[in-house]
Structures are given as C-alpha cells and as structure tokens.
Image (cartoon, rainbow, N blue to C red; front, side, top):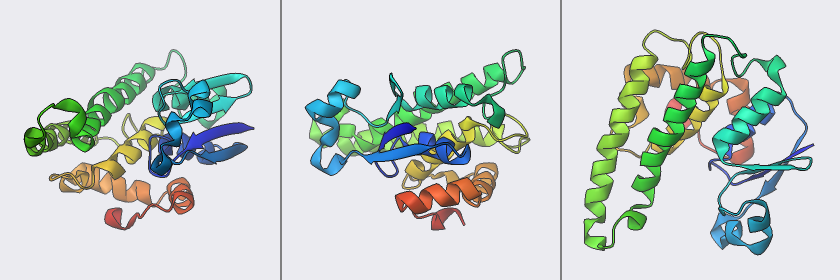
Length: 212
C-alpha cells in the first residue's frame, strides 16, 4: 500500500489524482498545515524540505510532487499515463511537466507568498500585480498548446493533465484566470467532469463549480 501525506488542494493533489485514477491501494495521511505539521520533527524525518506531499512506497520515501507523479507512472506503465521510452511524446511529457512545475507553479508560489520575496512590505502589492502578469503569460503558452490538442501533449490523458488541473485550481483567483483563455477553459471544463477528478475533489472537498 502506498502512503500519501497530503493536504487538500495542495501539491499533493496531482499524486492523489494519479493514485485514484490507477485504482491503486493507498492510504491518505493528513498533514495539517494549519498547525504547521509539515515542520514537525516526525514529518521532517520523511521530508527534510518540510513541504507537502510525501509518498511512502515500501522502503522508498519520495518528496516533490513531479517526482512522485513520475514514480507512480513508471511503476504502473499499464495505465499509459507517461509515454514509454522511445516514444516521440516522452520528451514532451517531461518538457511540459517541467514547465508546469518550474514556471507556472513557481510563479504561483511567489504570488501567494510575496513576503518571502521582498524585505519591504510596502512592495507586496507590486509583487502580486507583477506575478499576475507572469502567470497570465504562462497560461497563454499552455492555451496555445491546447489549441490543437485534446490533452496537453496530444490525444491521450497523461499525468501532465492532472498536474495542470491542480495548478489551474490554484490560478482561479489570478486577475486573468485560466478561464479567460478559450482553449484552456474548454479543456478544464472537460477535465472537471472526468470521473477521477470528480472523485478526488469530492474527497478533498474542492469546489469544481468555477469550471462547470
């Protein structure tokens, strides 16, 4: 049995979607961010970065959401959520997963934690405004990719789509949210109706109304 240390609508959402979609045997273990449990000595033994999520797979402990997603996909290739070695789409899978994590997610983190990126609180509104523009730029690139693709890297669902849906949830309060982009909005509406997304969002009590 896998063990996923999670918090609702956190970076654990993408791994949770994969575990549910693949029908794997897993246990959810809540890490209460409200009480800063991710910084507890017990949790830091598993994840020295003190962040969520962490996946325990037997003797193997993995942190960082993209790494967990890749591990799950490669452990269970029969679900085809990552293109196989030699497939021309495989490098595009890593390209887009990296882009989502290193660009869109990174910009979102600055936007939601601006105090970490300035030593002058009076500049925080400027940081937020600047980040809204940078996030919109990243969403526009994704929108263009979806103009001629059913899913992010082609005609088949992959882990990248679950990861993107997670970040789209976080991007809803942005001034130019994902729903402002024609192709991205249509894609998210379809994805929000996927049985896996419905099931996991019900478990984590996430409101899907904005996508519908």
